[in-house]
Structure formats: C-alpha cells, structure tokens
Image (cartoon, rainbow over all chains, first blue to last red):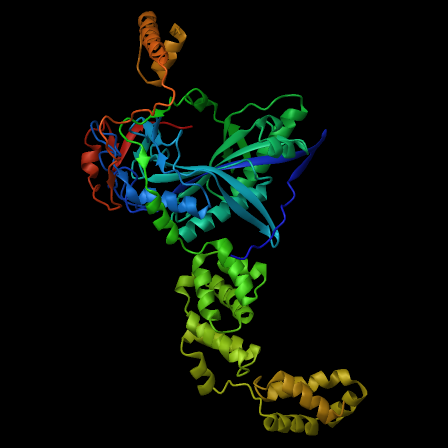
Length: 503
Length: 95
C-alpha cells in the first residue's frame, strides 16, 4: 500500500476572557450491525415494518426465553474491527446493564462491558489534502438496541414499538483524540465511510442506524500534550457527555455550544460537573439529564444466560482474507495508478459505488480525464436530477466511450458536453452517435483551410485590423468554429488562421 | 461490610420493588448477612484460577443469520394491560 503522508490539524482554540482554551473530544458511535436477524433472536431487523411485528418472545422479554447469539453479528463485528486495524479478542463475554424503561422489556441490556470483542484500533480522519488526524479506537463491543417510544400519539400515553429491540449494535469508542467540532464530524463521516465499504452498517443516520454520544471537555493550551505524553486524564478538564446525536451538523453545533458553556463556568470560578446532557437543536443548547442521574447505577454483572464468546483465529483470518479494499488504500491507489490529485481521489472514493463506477470509466483510458468527467459532468448532472450513481442513465461504458473519443481527438471537449447530454437523455453508443450525427472533429486541414479562406475573403476590413493588432485573430477563430458547427479542431484552426493572416 | 437502611431502600428502588419503611431494617440486615458470606468466600486465594463459566465443556451456541421468528404482533401484545394500533400503550414517559 502507498502511504499518503499527512500532518495533524491544529486544534480548535476558543478565546476566553482569561486566555485561550482548547477542546478535547471523544466519541461513542453506535452503529446498527447490518444483518438480517437480531443479535439474540431470529426476528427481522428490517426498518419500517408494522409496529411490534419484528418481535420474537426473546425480544419481548417473555419469561423463560433464552438468547441465542447470531453468528452473522459476530462476523460483522470482527470485520469492522479488522477494517479499523484493531485487535480482535478471541474471547469476549456479555454482561447485563440493568435499568428500567418501557422500551427495554428485559429490564437489562445485554452488552460487553468487561471483555469487548474488539480492542484497540485506529482511524485516519482526513481534514484536507495532506492534513489528517489519527484517532485511536479504544474498543468496539456488541450490544442490544432498545425499542422505540413514541410520545406524541396520545396526550396521556406513550406508545412502544419493540421492532428495534434486540437489534445488534456495535458501540465504537474512540480515545479523546479529536480536537474540534469539524474533526468530530469528519471522524463520524470517515467511520461511516469505512463501515459502508465493509458492509457492516448502512450508515443511515436519518433512521438512527448510526448515532453518536459525544464527550467534550476543555483545557488550556499545553495540557493536552501532557495528557498524550502520560495518558494521564488528570491533565484534562472534566467532561460532559452529550447523548444520542444523529446529524453531522448537530454534532458540531452541540460541541461548540457545550465547550462555550464549560468555559463560561470555569472562567466564573466554578467547576464543571461530570454529567449527561441532551442537545436541543431548536434552542441550540445542551441541558442536563439530571432525572437519569440516579438511575445511572447500572449494576453490571456477567450475563448468566450466555457463555463467553470464543472464536477461532482461523475464522478471523478467513474474514480478514475477504476484506474489501478500504477507503485509504483505494484513495492511495487512485493517486498512484491514475495520477489523480488527492482531492479528486477523495471525492471518487467517498462512496464505494462511485469508486467502482470511476474505475470502469478509467480502465485503459486517461485517468485524469475520466476523473474530470465523472466528478464534474456526471456528478453535477446526477445531482441536478437528485439521482444516485447506481441509477445513472449513463453507464460507465458509455461515459468511457465519450472519454475515449476526446482522448483520440475525435471530438472536442465542447462537443463532448453535447454528446454527454444526448447519451444522458436519449441513451445509445457514443461512438455511433458521433458517427451518425456527424459530430466528429474536423482535423482535415484542407477543410479547415477552406473555411478560413472563406471567412478572410468575406471580411477584408477585419483582416486589416488583425494585421495591425494580432490579438484580433481570435475573432477569425471564432468565426471559423461557428462556420464548422464547433467541430473544427481548435488548435488546427488557430494555427491556420495565424498562417493565413501572416501573423 | 454492613448495609444501612438507606442503601437497602436505594437497591429496592433500583430494582423497582416496593419495600415498606418498617421492613427496611430487616432487609438491610439480610443484605449484610449475604455480603458477610461473600466476604468469607473472598478469603479463598483464587490467584491464577480461571473463573468457571460452565460446568460442562460447552461452547456458546450460535444461530445463523436467518429470519426465523416474528410476525406475531397479536401474541406479543396479548399480555399487555393496554395496546393500541399495534403499540404497547404505557403511562407517559418523557425525558
């Protein structure tokens, strides 16, 4: 693999009344595991079903029901760990986290507090070409999701749907290595990209399939470096946790607001209380969830219904051998093999589908030209129609055909745009269309010379002016292009006009 | 270690079990006795001994990732004191 070297970005600094403050952020991302069935039951994970229809008696917490683990969920967690270059724990175990809530019929969530399935890994978070933050992953554990409570269907009642109850989640816990709101959003975006490449989570934030708890604290410049040297948290400020956010924009707003709240407290001589807070996007503020404080005694203990989870190294190796090419590697390869800029390579690898499409277009052709056409023309046109790349009316083979026609000099860039529009709206083979509609670039110098002669003969006054001021030759080029319907090779026209005018 | 009445009341509350004020001293005493027994067990030196998780050499049983259950809304809701439009209906819970 080709390594793209990078520098670390500068941390976000907020100027306070008593001096500068820096932000320290760690995230817990909950990613719904992409499987057909739930973590411990055979009920479906499908979104949008009739309420309480994707529910097994295990999920409903019926007496006497026992959980049986879904091997698909284990494989997905291992795959995710491998994708984050993390250590895989061949032995992990499940614990019960006890609390009462109507959407948790068991009265406890089965999770992995003491022995998670995945240990330390890392994510490279790209901020700009050549600038990236290395974020360490502390752990990933498997746990059950809760159900959904709906509070606005009846004034006196809450309605509970257990379809999501027991669906597998991966909780991906980062170290406090993130130093600003933008970095936090970029981290979630990168994680989402990797999960989607791996196929272990669909990353749909709107449906809540990817959501984040954000831990925020503030410190003085220099303190964070002391923490990094010693890994001693006492150098950092007291943190607050903002729960359950499912939008990149809100994550950034909430962090910014929370940091300023903490700075105001500290500069007032107060101290930050470690607590869980909720972000309110309507008021753009975070507020304390004190009501939950007392309940936050989860009395974890090993789940007596489940033996420790033991997996074989050979099984892990088999999953590792079948991992797809991941975003960082793909990006590096695009830069190296196709001569793309890091920026273009990032755009083309943002989604796996885009990368697949581009590679098909670029195969055996000019990579940079292919990248330009995919990014500028195709993406632009698809965006206009709000159309996904998988539904593109122009296939990679068709776009490749257009790129090939430009490279061979058969059509000019300008004609290519017309051709693209024809292929986009009408379909068809670009080579055939060019042939049938006479769109080929005229490179025959005889034909161009004739056209130039015609324009010169018809405009004697302009000829005199151009001889005095060679810049006016451009006017003749324009006239010739017009006369040939834009099909003349512009370079050839330039040359012939200059020669004929004796410039 | 002895458990006072306040702790006993808190444990009961966390477990959502109602305990009358008058019963707290006896409950606290019971907890203390149990913890005393645990403390006695803690005196045994178990250094280097793997915790026993099963009395038989069993591996955690797994299922394939296949949908085999569900589509039984009526059965799931059958025991609910109140259900409406396919949902469990419970007294309002809002954060």
